[in-house]
Picture 1 (cartoon, one colour):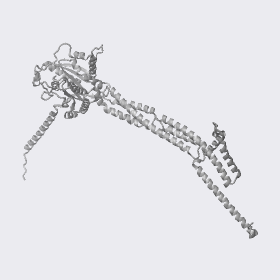
Picture 2 (cartoon, one colour; picture 1 turned 180 degrees about the horizontal axis):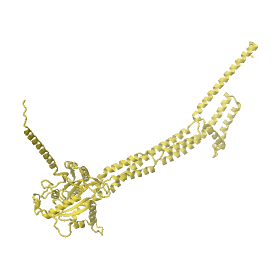
Picture 3 (cartoon, rainbow, N blue to C red; picture 1 turned 180 degrees about the vertical axis):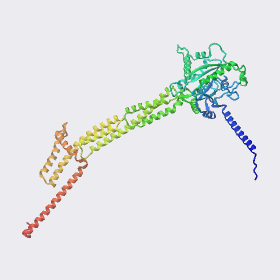
Picture 4 (tube, rainbow, N blue to C red; picture 1 turned 90 degrees about the vertical axis):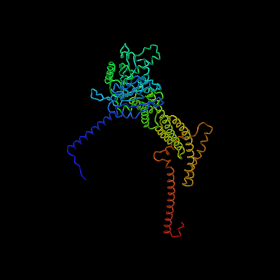
Length: 611
């Protein structure tokens, strides 16, 4: 294989050619990329056959790439009024490159379009502003409903920092009436003192083909925006003044400027050189360019300057809000922008209220609710978007009241459940105590008092009063029954003890006095109660019986031994010990007898053993 070596001069020439080709390719590539953005892009388009809008993702993706503060310059106005041509003049772009300009009787621009290459301006503090030119579909085009124009205007107003209202020849009352939706938007969204509102725009009233004489355009505009006297409270005039109030809120400044006709032949405007335009038109056009530059400032929403991505988010949310209802209103837009906040505030209220352990007193719940509700409404006022949110705030308060009623219902159910259980435990305790083998009035009362104390601790809330009443009725019923059964049981117990004394002292211990005492007690208890038959009193009310019950209470309810628990075992132990003692004594007696017999046997012999 042979290798050809080029001379040094030829090698340098080839290298230079290669570098030249690379540089040329780079320039072409950059120019192509620049030309790719140097054109209009649709960001919002009409929905075919409807009065709604849809987003164009290609155009929005161009917006997202824009870094730094955005200054949207939006032109609105009737169709066929020269909006697109004026924008091209502001951008210094020919018709064949800029926004589409037509001379037919049909609207040229559909939806909303943006110029892909913003004009960059330097502020006094060195900040770079991206002036974004926006073209919109004209009002009152054929085949479009008024609600479609309202959607276009609402979106244009909300996204604009400089709003140019393009009008032919003069400012008419009908031109102001077309801005009725502006009054609603102004009341709902615009403000200067809050961080959660849309800051007012700079509004430019651009009068095309201005040839009328008399007052200056600025004087004409000021007169047109001045409120109309309405001494008789006419509703029509009130509506006109309402529109004027709304326009005051929308615009931080209103400037009127006129543009004469650039050339007599309007159909050839795009084909003419600038030197062929009317000189007065060129002068006014340049004045308009300077006015736009002077008024350029970042678009701010909620006190924050928007970049491309922020503007896309605002456009997307606004289009969705406008499409939610067939006929959009400022209220419907406010609701859409704040509905997530309402849900967030509701969840915050529910979370803060759910930390409470039910049941609890209703006054405590209401106090807690008032505190949490104040906190939630403060969050709502801080984070809300818009100014006219009274209806939405009222709706939020209504939602929170419904949550409070739900908590109250849950608290009532929990209170009823806990109180019924506590009351049932007390009733069961009283019934159990009343059926004890060794009843005690003192112990019965102590058990009830302990149970009532536990009831008062556990039972709180709206269910308490009802169950307290039930518990008091149960106490009255059970205590009456206990007292009657207590006296009967004590009487029968004493009778049983008297019979036991008779049996024990007759057959076991053989103590005559003890047997006699048993018989006396038995006979007395059989005869004495019958002496009260036919009278209103009872033996149980006598002082003697009260002394007997006191003695019984002292024995049964003593602080040393719980006879109810240990009485029977103690009796069993006593009987076992007694029987054991008797057997031991018997064995000892037998042993002593045998010992005596052995002694006698040793002393006297077997013959005396019988003795």
